[in-house]
Amino acid sequence: MNAAVFAKLLGIFATVAIGWFASRRRWLGAPGGGDPARVLSNAAFYLFVPALLFRTMARIDLERMPWPTLAAYFVPAIGVLLAIYARQRRTAAAHAATPATRTIAATYGNAVQLGIPIAAAVFGEAGLALHIALVSLHGLVMLTLLTVLVELDLARAAGSQAHWDTLRSTVRNALIHPVVLPVVLGLCWNLAGWPLPAVADQTLAMLAAAVVPVCLVLIGVSLESWGLRGQLRGAVELGLLKLLLLPAVVLLAARLAFGVTGTPLAVLAMMAALPTGSNALLFAQRYATREAEATAAIVLSTLAFALTAPLWLALAAWAG
Image 1 (tube, rainbow, N blue to C red):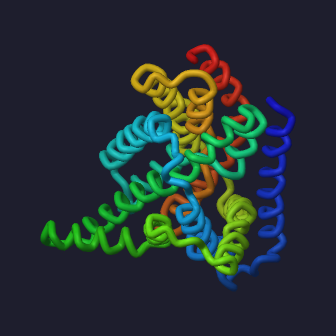
Image 2: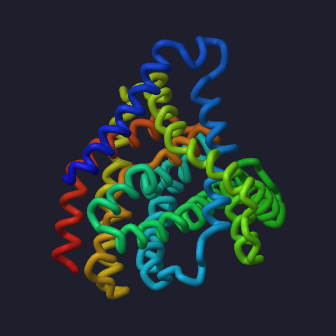
């Protein structure tokens, strides 16, 4: 593996370890004095992630996006997402949000703090530009769809009698949501052709910069709180889906159905092959289900990524 990528992996684990140590030493709060994991999760979910999503959507150049290549990623990725979600719906779940929460861990990758340096180091400027385009739509497409699914499940579980009540509750909760609302508002701002004022842009940029360190520290805090014991089976299952199933489907579909070759094919395959991202834990924290499993899936899939990444790079080069 490229030295720069390996150093990035070590940096990620070092930051997670700092969060674990801080939680162990009770620097973020003593037992009974509030849940530091919940506080960090709320800060990320309600402040930092919305700032990142709004700023990304408000600044993206929609006219220059490589739409056919992007479709070659998102069409098969959404297919895998819906298939995994449907399978999770068929299993007995103690919490209505469990199917969508497990699905995000199996399909939503670490596209920013790990994906960007990998794209830059392995594919160069052209590959990085395509990866950035994928990242810009990653939250809009995947998180919005998962949010609608989880809110629909929660509305059903609440016992709404009429289909109209269920639909209305789902639409309201999905739209007035810290993930979906900033995406919609940012897209509307973009389509209106308004520039971001300098002060607003700087404020959003500073808030967005906190997403990566806060989420990595949160993973460490959650790991100290729950550990890996009892979570290995579920985490391994989700990790296999994320590291093996999703990239296999994306690689095959992009090559055979969309005709993507060369560096773009490798970029799409690597995007799909990235380990589970921290948004899986944010989702689990928000809906209070499977927090320990999400933490374990993030940690274990990131460790395993060092072994699976060269495999997908080699397969993409052979197929392309």
